[in-house]
Image (tube, rainbow, N blue to C red; front, side, top):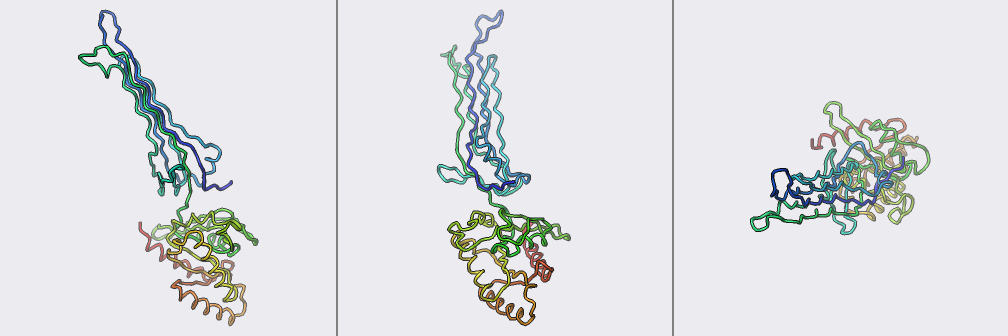
Length: 338
C-alpha cells in the first residue's frame, strides 16, 4: 500500500436549520398564537487520532468532508433535528494546518485525542421566539447561520522515540528488525526502504516501550531533492533521540558518512541536531583483521568523543554488539516518562 504523509482536503461544518413561521390552529381555540420552532444546530467537524490508521492515503481519494446541516423548525414549537457531527479519523501524529493562513489548527499526538476544528452553524429562531406584548403575531423567523468551510493540509509526523538515520544500505531495516521483531523489507541494494518503518522495543519486566523509526536512506544532495530527498525527515522531528547508523569502513569513510548526513539534516532543519544522539557502527563482521578493526574502533571513538556522542560497534548480521546496544535502549526506557 502506498504511504502518504501529506494531503490537502476541504472541510465544512453544517448549516444551521431555519426557524419556522407557524401559528397554532386548533379546534375551539380561535386565537392561537405563533408556535414556530427553532432550527437545529449544524454538525461540527471533528478530527480524531486513531492507532488503526497509519497513512493519509484515503484523503487523496476523498478530498471533501461536510457535516450534516441542521433540520428546519416546525409548528407546535418543534425544534429541528441537530445535524450529525462528522468525525474524521487520522493517524496519530497528524498536524492539521489552515492552508490559507498557515495556522496550526490541531496537533493530534495521542490515540483517541480529538479536536473540534469547525463548529456548526446556529439554528435560526422560530417566530414563537419573537412574540412580545406589542407584537403578538410575528410573521417572520430567522434563517440559520451558515457553517464554515476551510481548506486544510494534513501532515503526518510519526511518533518515534528514537529516529534511526543513515545512508542507504547501512543496515537500518535489519537493525530495527533485530531490536523490535518488525519485518521491514530488506535487500542488498540502496533504497530498499522507501517509506518510514516503525518498530516497538519492549522491556518485559516493566512493560515500557520505545518506538524506533527507520528513515529511508539519505544521500548527498538530499536537501536539494536528490534521491528520496528529505521528505521523510519530518518523521523524526518528534523523536527524543537520533541513532546514526553508519556502515564500517576506513576511519575517513566513517567520519565522511557521518558528516554528510549531518550536513543534509542541517540543510533541512538544523534544530533536529540538538537532540540527544548516539552513533552505531554496523557491519563490523566485514573487517576480518582484528588489528585493523581495533585501529578503526579507537579512531572512531576518539572522533565521536570530541562531539560528545557515545559510539557502539555492532554486526546486525551475526548479532555482535547487539546485547550492548539493547542495554542502551533499556537505559533510555528507564529515563522515559510513564
